[in-house]
Image 1 (tube, rainbow, N blue to C red):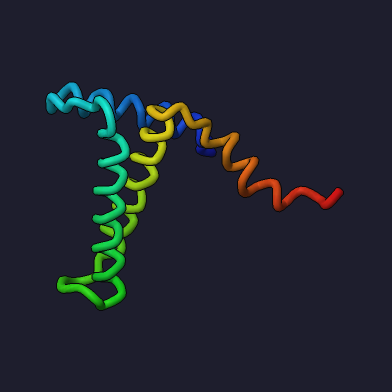
Image 2: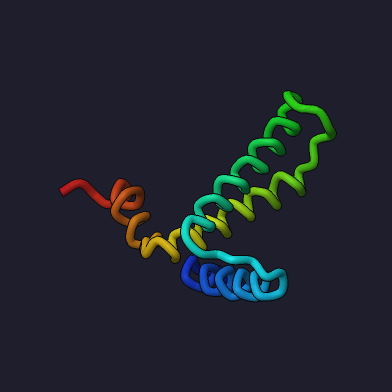
Length: 101
C-alpha cells in the first residue's frame, strides 16, 4: 500500500493524541520542537554507534526506529506550527525537478 505524506501525518497525529492521553503528556507551547530535538539527539547517538564512534553495538533497527521518530516528530511540529510541509517541499526542493523555463 502506498503511503502519502498527508496520510502519514494524520496517522502520526492520531497516535500522538492517544500516547499523550494515555501518559498525561502536556504538549503545549514548544513541546513539539523540543521533542524533535530530543529525537534528533537519539538518532545522532545511533548514528555514532553505527559508525563506531560511540560505545555499544551498532543496531540498524534502532537507527531506523530513531529516524522514524524524527520524521514523526517533524510532522507533529509542522502541524503545531502551521507549516504545510508538502507545499514547502514543493517550493524548496521539488522545484529543482521542473524543466527550466
